Length: 452
Image (cartoon, rainbow, N blue to C red):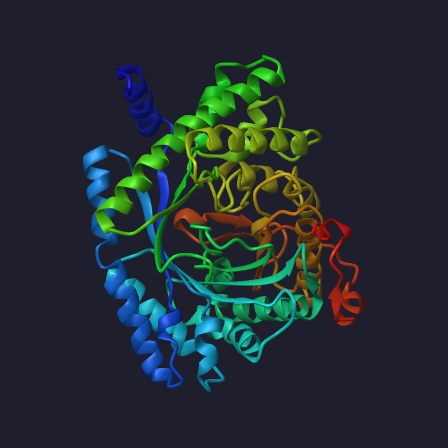
């Protein structure tokens, strides 16, 4: 039974503490769209997406109006395009990105993810072609997001793919130099990518997923922040318990929306991703949660421990609220999308090295980080390799979304607008990693992979 006190608490969280459903994401399989004729394949992709998701935005808006729960984004994820396009003789996969973009615009969703390739064990010809197409594809589309998985705990790290992605990111930035390299904000490089992630830019519809599925991503850093203010000075046991209870309430709301959207669309419910996803708005910051635990500024000593507690407590509270928690689920630390992270970066309190340490205990990885435009492709590849190694060894998903902003230097601020926020240009190490990256080959899987 839902009590009036719980309803009032939820209303307060929505009205005053930035609680929202960050996204309803429909996953759509495109495997039945495979066709050796590229034009025919693109037509099938468009028809499948539009017929499947034609009511997605309206249903989301109806749920918002009836339940009073803000739903910020409606999105689509599709089967990795490298798998679908492999049957064609196309060398450039940009036409596939453009048809995804057209379909996304016609159904009214914010983003569509799945211009993706899985190359952790090695390359197919199609995987190579997709990676080569990413810079142009992202520069010439508005709503398409791309991702590449370069490593897993089972397979190790494909260092040839890591090297390719450094160059790919540089080219994508240069093609969108007039917007600060904005194409890179739609590109994620993964280790241990998951099939049911509703969040962009890394969402794709895995081949183990149903024909269609509904995933929901919740948010709520502001709610956790306010809850911790009430236990200021209390021991960490109390802090953890408070976060768990708060995450439970947030996840229950997500479960409600997911089930309702699933019923109305006639599409199976997949997972609730209970990640704390911040925004540039004041009062909606993961960094401010960590500071509420007693840190003068996010990035100082103790930050990693605070984030570990937060991430663990969020997961424990969430799994009690839903039988189908999935995606990434925990705490995101994107620099440009978090008001507190932006402030810490501008003050010099947080660096790429500290963020890398924090990714060992949070949900994903180095996210929405801007570096000087003259940062070399090899340095970017080395940053990706470091982050992939953390994911590989620790059996967790890690990712890099980095923007080498053309013409920008340390101390500048690049504006992306909306939920993408503002990214302070952060320094990267100047010592070369080129010889390391040029070795190529594969970093073998760790001993932890031998579990059978």
